[in-house]
Length: 150
Image (cartoon, rainbow, N blue to C red; front, side):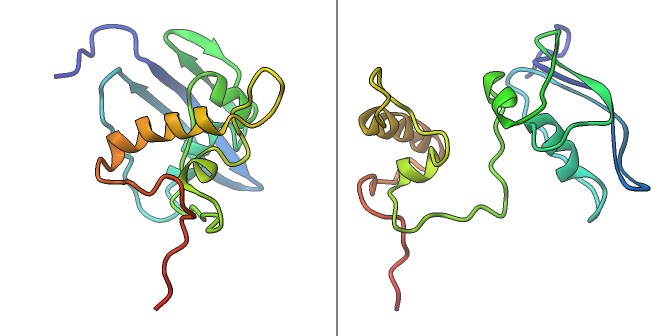
């Protein structure tokens, strides 16, 4: 059971965003608590993806506030969101089929060592942790993710 009596982990307060004359998100408020699993439901065009893109920094809300652990934060781009441990995996995800799982997972935000070189060992270790939660049977960490052609 999730304790909803404390401070929410993430708060979206009175979020609105328009594109031209179209109100995509209109005064939405959502509280997300630690350990809570939330489904965002609505018809096509209801603003679900737009709201998530505001939280993840892909869009800037026209109005409203985002609070993390009760503190107001500015999320103007995905890097700002990432600094708050917020990231989005979009349903239209396209894989670079010539790269392995870790390279795809960290594509565009590769982990680097103290010399500025890509730290493939650390990226694979992090990928193993993530995949252990998502798909414990996944074993092909060092091969391209391309699907075999029949």
